[in-house]
Image (cartoon, rainbow, N blue to C red; front, side):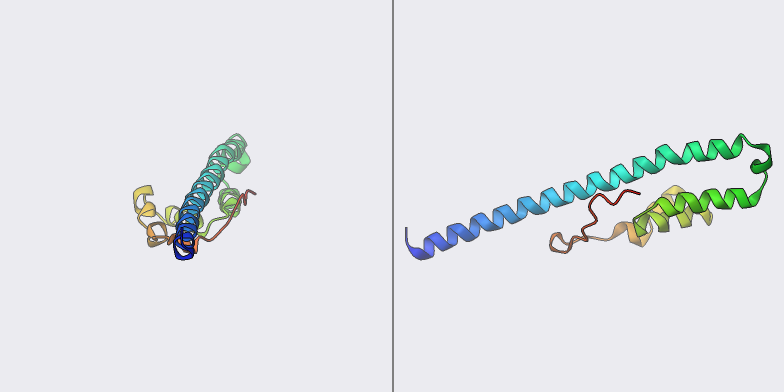
Length: 119
């Protein structure tokens, strides 16, 4: 095999590995985001149940605001915070999912790496 052929083969292998690595990064990011969202889902109902079970807190708007702020503070992703704010401001879940922040196309070369940023 000529030097040019070897170089082409090496470059082709590198591009293949790069494409696979991008796929792995996307899968890890998906898993990380899914884990964060499941964590929010599992913690928030318990906090709300505590508030509801205390009559003095149940009708106190400051307690509800505090609960909302606690939930919001757990979000590490700006898109999730924007969705939460939209819902608090009266948007339906469907409307919040259609926010421009949720519909960005990500270039595989421009991944904003936020691995395992659980709080």
